[in-house]
Image 1 (tube, one colour):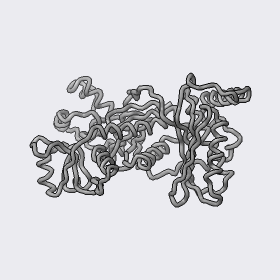
Image 2 (image 1 turned 60 degrees about the vertical axis):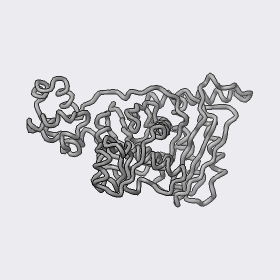
Image 3 (image 1 turned 30 degrees about the vertical axis):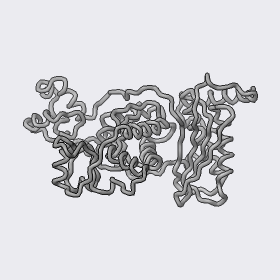
Image 4 (image 1 turned 90 degrees about the vertical axis):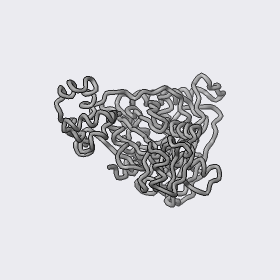
Length: 406
């Protein structure tokens, strides 16, 4: 089975995160909207541009050039200092948000992460998950990301570097000739600047040229690095997502509906389907939740959410669904067209931390056995192999809106 890999890359991270921090602290100016850069001490000739706004880029300002050079190109340029404490905070916020989708996350840099989604699609598609992450980051964290969608890390990384900002791009094997081979060879991931002139001297100017070059010639000229270049040019990469197992802070899922829903019974079916996905992930992580949250977005893009703290932590689909259904009834105004529904659980704990409730009786044990049996069937035959009766009619309705992906 092919791996399902995403690469999430923050657009203009240092400038975006500085802008958000300044706005949070009372600034009336969004430095993303003016000619601005994040850079070193402008009084020193060695100070360089770490990040630039779009307006600075339009003036010709480039990352890694000196502040002096940048100001020559853009006389009205505003210079702001870096703040790596703030950057780490926003990097962590992104990481915790991504933990809602998978526990296999590699922090490739402060503003980039690889996600292995192979076991966490739960019947959905990789592209839909990429679109959801793209929108969720923007909505909840206030900055934008590019998301690369592929079957290995290399292609996902290459895809996320396509047109920016705020985009989702695929790079599957059949797309390599059109999307990757036409690029300059200098665009290939992990190709050093010193290597490019040598390849040009060999008349290798595009990634396609490199892919079609005899591998033995490259090996003789560049050794093991030549083999790697040829493999990368052909989209070959078997490296794993290197992750450190960390307990997620919350697990959630939300659905943008293909058409507005006004029927409370239909909304309950959707909440059940989402709850089943969320609790399946909970049990897979061997975690239990103490807080349940339901979110609704109406046709005017107004969000409403209610949450409830549970007396005892649980991973039971039935228990969490009953609470979610109760929250839905409390918050839903009859006749309101709903375009998005979300279910999330928080305040997660390990099983050993649970205080056994007086109400944890044989009925609960039967529910746990039922959940375990359903999970085992899903593991063996696929997530969609078995569906609870309450949401049997909702599969065709629950689909993420498929945005244009280029």
